[in-house]
Length: 310
Image (cartoon, rainbow, N blue to C red):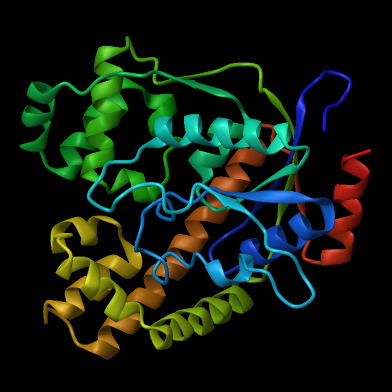
């Protein structure tokens, strides 16, 4: 599992939503005796299964295939705050655990910041909450918070994705950390791992069709009922809407703010825009030096992994 530099080898499967990352990661795990680590900022939450596309049944054993173990799925309650620092710490622990049992860590996900924190070896400041500062920041609107963060650390501001950029809670946390750590939220250190990055490419029209097909399938699987159940169990509509995409639009539908057809169309368009932003992140990461192998053929991917593990 280690190269000449004694760095643990990790395979990363990345791509936009609906590109098939989970399926490829599970197949590789079965071929190469691996386990899957999710890199999805919403799959960490319990009870958010259909909406986040966890595809948990795919990990289960079949008549011909063994079960595949997964990590960093269902590790937090929806009411909890789960951030990048918590994810990175848990991911490192999961990697160490997998390697200790002689298995291959396979990270699969589309949350670019989470992936970069692991692959590029960010050192994240562990800053405790400053509740007085938070109270002051809570009074400011999104535009004001963005301006403060931009002034605090322009380099980091330009890296965060649109999801974070439009999330008051995350902006407040970033400002809080920068304010209390002399602007050192993250410093790039020598990465601990040797990584193979595999991206799943799709033409825009085909990907959008996959997004629509997957969305309709999840609605048929009971996504609306799942989100209604989260609210029934105490997760506020406001909190659910902050998770964005499915949780935002289905919550608005369930509150009778929009009709069903409008919900489906707005959600579809939002997911398509989200996929485009994900690809923008990955292309920017490539410009920063990441070597991503864009391949869709599973046999070709298998060959690349085999060569990487030699």
